Image (cartoon, rainbow, N blue to C red; front, side):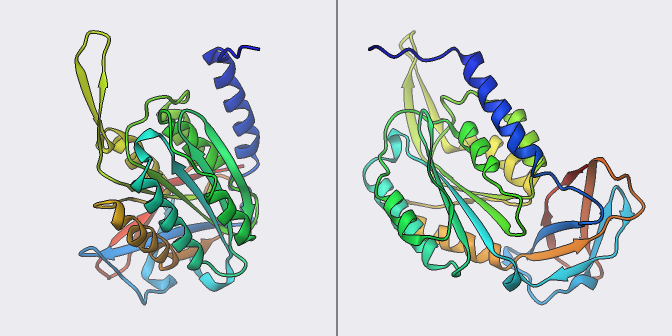
Length: 302
């Protein structure tokens, strides 16, 4: 039996409906529950440690909030890995990616959970969130590199895996090139990111690929072509993009990403003086301290 690719409208509708159901259940829910904000503080490219809740000025829709600080050891981690397995990753790069992924597992605590998505032309969920390390290792062994790159679709699927539990979620995306086959638009993915508390980091490797046009000319795509999307996604969620200089640098870059996430501050407050629903703009600054503060731009409340 021959297989025909379904119309774009059918696939897009299915993606949007399924993920909307999942993400709607993951919004920041009520004022009684409170708001948790992951915060990174750096100065001169180095992490700033030793701060406490009193060093932060948190404003919800411009209104100052009373902030407390949570102990990271008390919060389990949900690590969602979203790995590019398009054709350009084949060979040494795929082997380096697997080595980097296994190194990440070694840095997790017993109760931390991991999920694995791979993407090329299509997105594949290889394992849902699990604390079973053997299951993740086995999933790594199934990775193969081929076809095109559906980066936006994969990021969307990774965000939808965020579960309504008390854990912190780090969505780690690896890609080495531009998006060439996604159904979803950048704006759709960014809107989805606004409705979860996942922090998105991206690890990229500079790469060039030539695609021949029907007219015979070549257009060069690099990972920088995907940079606007990755920058927008990571900035919206309070993460950032890190570049690995080569395949051999992937392991160190992955390990650095996890270590940096562990060194972030987790602030908590119960919103006061603001609306109980809708989009809330967040501002996080330091009081009398120097340093660059990186945090998510806001949240939706219901």
